Length: 159
Ligand code: 4NP
Image (cartoon, rainbow, N blue to C red; front, side, top):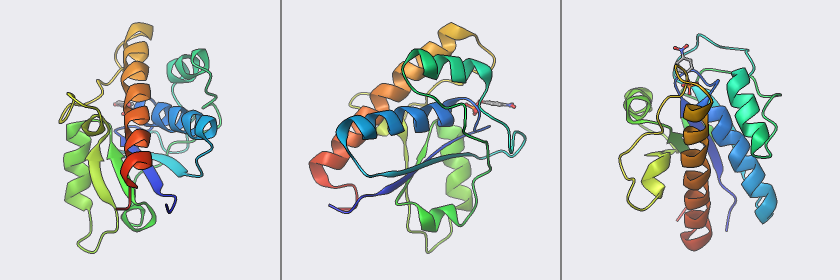
C-alpha cells in the first residue's frame, strides 16, 4: 500500500488540528506507519503561533508533544500535496469545499465520518472551554484517528 499524506484542518490550527496531528503521529509511530502528517487552519489569525497552552497540556497528558508545531493557514496547494484533507467539524469542511480546486487530488472528509455512528459530526471546539472540553476533544480526536488508520489498514486509503 502506498503511504498516504494526511492534513488535519480546524479553524485556528491551535487547538483541535494540532491535537489531531499529535495523536496521529503517536498512533502512526506505535503502528510503524510511514504516513506524512500535517495540520492547518481555515483561518489565519494564529499564523506562526504554537498550539494553545491548554492543547499542549492536554496532548502531553496523553503522551504527545505538540509544543513544536506552528499554526498555518490552509492553501490551495494543500489539495495537491495531500491525499486526504480531514476537517475537524462541518463548518470547516464547508469552507474547505469552497476553496477545493477542480483538479484537486485530495479527498475531503470529516474526521468523525471515519467513526461508526458519528458520520457528519464535528469535534466540538474547546477554545472557549477549559480542560474538560479539551479532554472531550482529545477523546473524539484519538478515537477518530484510530478509526481513520484502521480504514487505511483495511482498504488502503488510496483505493
Ligand atoms: P481550533 O480552535 O479551531 O480548534 O484551533 C480555535 C482557535 C482559535 C479561535 C477559534 C477556534 N479563534 O477564534 O481565534
